[in-house]
Image (tube, rainbow, N blue to C red):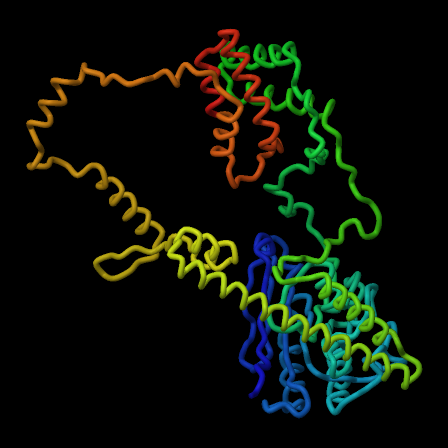
Amino acid sequence: MKRGSGGVGVLIKDEVLDNFSVSILDSSVEDILWIKLSHKYDDSNNICFCVCYLPPEGSSRLNDGEKFYNDLLQQVYCYQNEGFVYIGGDINSRCGSAQDYIQGVDDINDKEIIDVINNKYDDLLIEFLTSCNFCMLNGRTDGNNDFTCVSKRGRSVVDYVFTPHEQVDMCTSCDVYLMSDLIVDTGLNFEKSIPDHGPIVWTVNVKKDIACDTSKIGQAPNTDRPRYNLKRFPLNFLDNNTHIQDTIDKIEHELVTNKDINSAYTEFVTSIEKEMKDTVPVLKTPTGPCSNKRKKSLRKPYWSEELTSLWNKVCIKEKQWLKCKNCTNLRRKLKQEFCNIRNQFDKLNRNTKRNFQQKEQDNLIKLFQSHNTQDFWKYIGNIGIANERLQNIPFKVKTDDGFSSDVDAVLDKWKTDYEKLFNSGDNGNFDNNHLGWVKGNNHVFPTRNCDTLNCPVTRQDVIDAVNRTKLNKAVGFESLRNSICIDLLFKLISFCFQNEVFYLSHVKFLLTF
């Protein structure tokens, strides 16, 4: 069976669209795509990016390397004046120790060479670069230089980033990442197999127009808040009637005198923050070179300590093999060791995943046969299948002419439908007898036992109310956790009821909270 191969695409972050508009310059040639990022405020900061792919030697796809580089060279001449030009992609060209510029003519630094093997595309690549005065960023600028493709079949540098000679100084760094490092640092999960090719990340220092800088518009101010250790929450938190009374007086003053609910809530938050600062211990912020690295994600439910141990060995053997540059026999031995430990990991990973999936299927069958539908659907939700059913409301309505996605038409349709939902107009079938009974008995109130309304408010009542209010919700800008609100509100409500100090303004405040 043939494997899927080829195809190019570009993904752009939403935040880039705040300052740039995106357009496709050229997609006429297969596996070569040109896009343009036009700056909304400064035309001198436009960027043209080309992503391309050349099938490897022996591929079943048509791989005319000479035609590929001729088409790419022609497009470079067409778009080189549209903005800063960068070309990146997997072009399967290994140029070995050959230089990508004309020595003695071009004033450019040498690049670090780690792949000394070449293939039949090497001359075509070097000729293309020298013809259009482009050069490689791999191994030329600051950053980590490594093999771009690593697998059990071998290692190679076949992915590149090209830029004109005059733009090299704008590139402050260019880093090549191994997939094994990304998995450890970011916790990426791959369902079937780990990709062979790693990403290349380069940083460009584009000149900035201060008068048109809108990057900080709408951003919240950088306020570093301390992180408190809530696992060591003190028992005497807000255990001071004088402090509670002072807080109530301040809130009453803002509500009754100034009639400002925002200021009252600010006083409430300030009192809590002051008490937390005095009584709750603060978590220490980690420092050092590894403080920002995330640990390996264990989101895979079948992951085990044995898999972790094997994966760490795979990473160690991979780095030993890639860093070996001298002895051929030693390099061959290290490659074999890497392939062996990688095969062990892949086999154990497949078996563990297969056994876990079989176990989950057996559990679902047992729940289904027990006719316990509630536990059955709850179990499905826990394994993540239910999340696939979560969909947004489609922004589309049915009209006389078919379906419409126009914003005004959809909102107008929703408005009229909701207006008619409870306002159906005069109904000729209205029951006059029922209307007469309602008018004749509107002064009669049913007798019910209301003793529960006079019972004191318990801590569990406050816990239930707070959990219903803040269930599955993130903390606000004041960073107040549920555990803090529960004790404070319970003491505040108990104090008000016991001392008969309770006004309507307190009700408004608590409901707003």
